[in-house]
Amino acid sequence: MAGSVDEQPIENEGQGRDVVLSARDVTVAFGSKVVLDKLNLDIYRGEILGFVGASGTGKSVLMRTVLRLLPRRSGTIKILGQDFDELNEPQRNALDMRLGVLFQQGALFSSLTVKENIQVPMREYLDLPHSLMDELAHLKIRMVGLAADAADKYPSELSGGMIKRAALARALALDPELVFLDEPTSGLDPIGAAEFDELIANLRDSLGLTVYMVTHDLDSLFSVCDRIAVLGKKRVMVEGTIDDMLAYDDPWVQAYFRGKRARSIVPQDNGARHDNGSGGK
Image 1 (cartoon, one colour):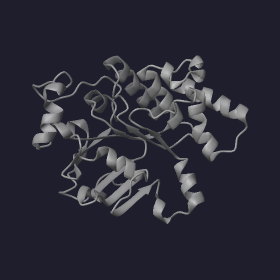
Image 2 (spheres, one colour; image 1 turned 120 degrees about the vertical axis):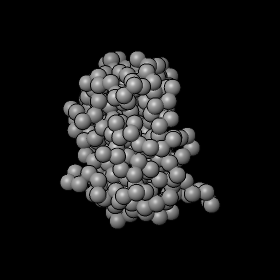
Image 3 (cartoon, helix red, strand yellow; image 1 turned 90 degrees about the vertical axis):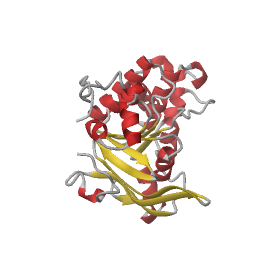
Image 4 (cartoon, helix red, strand yellow; image 1 turned 60 degrees about the vertical axis):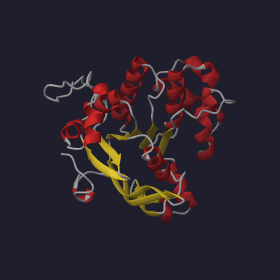
């Protein structure tokens, strides 16, 4: 059932489910410009949450705020039950190790090979023998569907899809519980994007991941997301399943999920979505 955060408290939703990320009354501003205003959001263990909104509304701002890359003016954020503001440095490092991040363009270090990029978080947080780090890096490379010889290639030698997979391998380097994906299929062709969506869903199922995905990709939203949260008016204006989005009475939400770009996905006669077997729960 869809929930409008402005209409009812978010605490009443998902009762009994394990919340892995909780944002309460989060406000973020750049100078006098308020981007997020008393925003509330919960993400539940094991789900893939798609986070959408019009360009410039602050989708990536929220992700970067959660990751402490941007400051917030007020509000609280708890990840895996912990508030970073209340932790000392060793505790923060321990919590950081339980998180993985894939930035929009991959953000691989151009001077490092794929294997060396994957080992960056290992070197930062772990004290492991070089041989073990090599073994773990090769394991992550296989996990994301890259060929073994990709390990010694530089980002400049990779296709767009390979860069995304290599960046995902790095995000999974420390076996995180919660993974943040910023526009993971951006720049990929439809086949590559569909394959990446399938990879995300398979990894969620096999590793027990929770995934927070910022995306504009309607195919991703329809095929792999268990729930969707829509950002508008500086807050989460509605959250729920795809069917909840299709039924929600808001002009922007209807234009987004029933517009021309969505017509190949959503039958226009009854609003039911195609079920290809890879979607959410």
